Length: 88
Image (cartoon, rainbow, N blue to C red; front, side):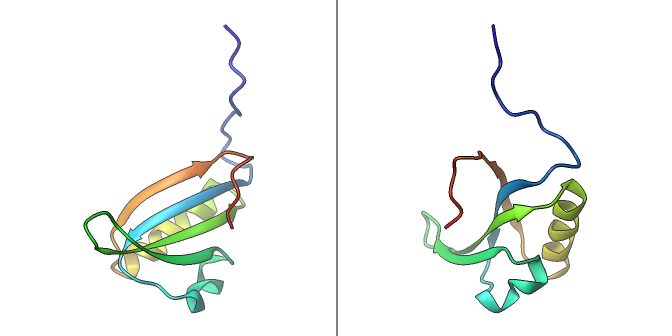
């Protein structure tokens, strides 16, 4: 069986989508290295924020997650997007 899935690497850039409980407006984009910030409603009408874009490596991703924790925003999910998934 051939596995054509992209290999994960700690030092490679990748597209990510981070979902947090709470609201961040677009002015926080620079604080999160230019990620696109979008407010959404969860299925139970709770305010959620999506941060989407390219992350240089896993170390940067961990730093962003740490910043979110410092802001008191619970992290709901972190998804690595496939190469053909658009972030806009």
